[in-house]
Length: 416
Image 1 (cartoon, rainbow, N blue to C red):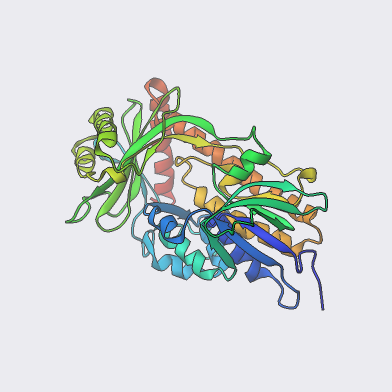
Image 2: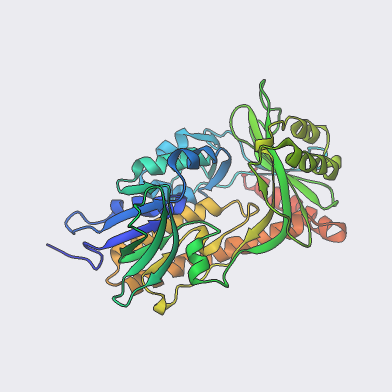
């Protein structure tokens, strides 16, 4: 019987988010049937019901090039199910738009789909995508268990410190042969092993919430998602439906220092100043903006947070059998609109490299060669958007000119 350097080994995945679940599913899908498989355990700090309940917002999953998450879902065999849960982007419904302060459309983007995909992109509720991945996972998921830190042992294995309800009083550490770190942007394991490699403030603050319309979302945001620019006054606002009656909005602006994060407070006293400030800063965005703000009545749906991101890194040869994927390696801000795509692709690509390689070193080198340039490009684009979407004066007019030229080019090629 054939063998593999991971046969019979124990792999721990820290985090049951999109990256961790994508990796677990991809590894089982690609593992050769004739080769003894490794044992895989997934630890997730949240309880199953808690994790799903906090993820009602929608995310963009792209399919216009090979780096998109739709390509990863197709490879995982989960594309059809994801399309069934898509809110926008299927059957020609919806596109990304940029509107001016008077809600005139500046640009509409409909790129061509890649690799025979049925659509170049969708909007889907994160909770549905996560449920699809969870259903596909066949390995043990230990809910309510957090991975606090990790250390390389002298025998070459990894010791992972774990805490939570799913751990017995005498079990504070778990040993494994390979640790996949997928515990998010605020990774505790990264903070332990790479204490100087934390999140950086990207220079912008977002505040917003979910507006509810019992009789239906008003157009044009009922069947489109996108961004409204303020005409050179330094603010912009993102909109996207979350279901048939709710639309998430996020007003953003540049600010020299980050603000404290506010989310899921449930307190009207804490969220009222956020709503009032957003209304004042977005005063030029027209009646529809104010209608959406006025329809944001649940304090638990109001948020305010600084945009943060983190540059990707290559794994060093002496780091041991510990691999960082998704946000734990390369966090991006909401302005990227691509974080979920990076997570899905990281999971698939790492599994592919591990299965095909003859050593862990070669697998990690091959994975880094794909992951780091991909994430670096997304981060660079995100910072560019932050700079120009909130621009004023001559820089704004240059930005608006670029949008007009790009919009015309898309129209000429039949993509707008």
